[in-house]
Length: 318
Image 1 (tube, one colour):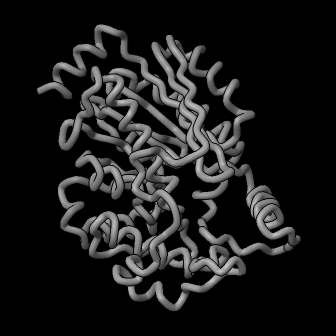
Image 2 (cartoon, rainbow, N blue to C red; image 1 turned 45 degrees about the vertical axis):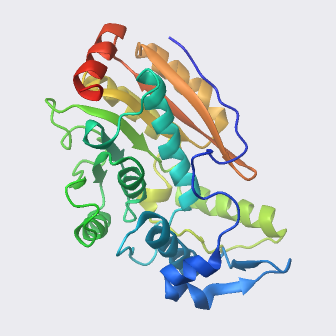
């Protein structure tokens, strides 16, 4: 068993969202963004990142410009994620596959990923299909999110045949009911809800706004929005990830690498102890950063060395 820790304070070098946004190019991709572009107090062209509408139009422009989408939208009030950070997760998973496959990255239909809790935005499958040609099974427990994600697939020919959107009818399950025991998939990824309650989420937003502006606010507007199941769950991310790890053991022969984001470093030791108690054969801790924010990916596998070699020969090296 090994543990790899990568200390990073910047985006992955292959992440195309380095540096400042080129708003001239982004406006060409999405004219609706133009009304939200301003000059901030430092004299720099930007948008009001506290405005959900502005962030949504920025995301749309990025997806049109950098990922060649023809359509992207989400219902009002649903999570509108910052794309650079989401892209980093995908690029680090690509690195994980590359190092697992003797330095050669498996591309295209050789890789099938399961996105646990894809949300209405479908961001991870969009980036993964357009950057590496991977296939995705995108799951969610919320019907409106499934409808939104399905519409994104339907209206983008680039996603047709690459992304399967599936409703998870059981909120307590992660892989049961949406994954057949005969199926093989190479990666799972998840950005879990990390708050334990609505009140906890509100306090987190208040802290974020105070850190950014120095101002206190009793009713913060979430600039990236989000529904209850996207932002909080009973027991927070620690219980959510622990339960996912336990269920993953039942599918240990079906998947090469399971993975999840872990937002709170304080949870790492307990989660790693959980993995050890489940007798994983290997796990990786990968740090990634964006500006002053640091998060981490935790990945694990139950496959023996012999099973890993067979997996690579039969799926990745054909």
